[in-house]
Length: 264
Image 1 (spheres, rainbow, N blue to C red):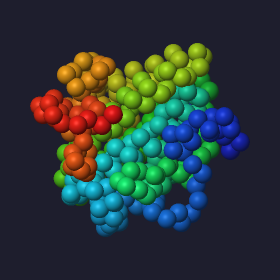
Image 2: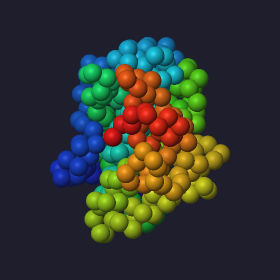
Image 3: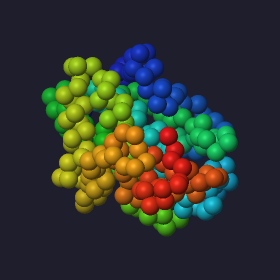
Image 4: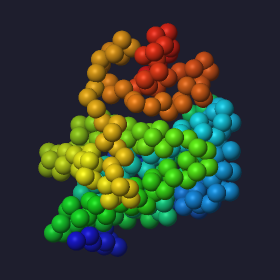
């Protein structure tokens, strides 16, 4: 059973952890921001992407949409997943509750993630059902909708967009949650991550299949990496917004171009 209690909030120390991932208090009419739900409006979404494109240094809307998705995926998922798996608290990550900020400086994002309502849910007798509800809000109720919208407007590959989201899920769990949660929460966090990677986990995405699992594979040493990495299956187009071209640390393209520069 999922319970919402008006008095249930993040503790100050929990807020501090999530603020490091971009969570911030909501204020109306912030400059360079838009209610995330408004991105489902074709005209407003195009207008927003067109504003961002020159600031990113992107050459077209397809590149812009991919890089925007990378940013939105991190800002949305990091607080929601850490609150769930680290604190046993559920933030509402639905489009209706999120605000997308898009300030950039020298092509670098300065955006954070305001939530209109930062109260949290807890669970009583069924954590799995509560977890499903929390994840459904942030995936089926947010990121899945944006994947469809960005594809419809720019024709950027859904596969690229979903891998952008997948690599965020992987890094949030492997580099942030699992290495820092309390001993009490460790087994829950591992179970949450396994659930997200389970092929049979589909409903929370609002899709017929799990869009993350195809991108999860063993890490490997490459000629361009000092440590094992999980090489992407697709390219996110980051190199098309840098001059000279720089590739993400897990990009497959530099393996075919040995003299290319990787982003650390």
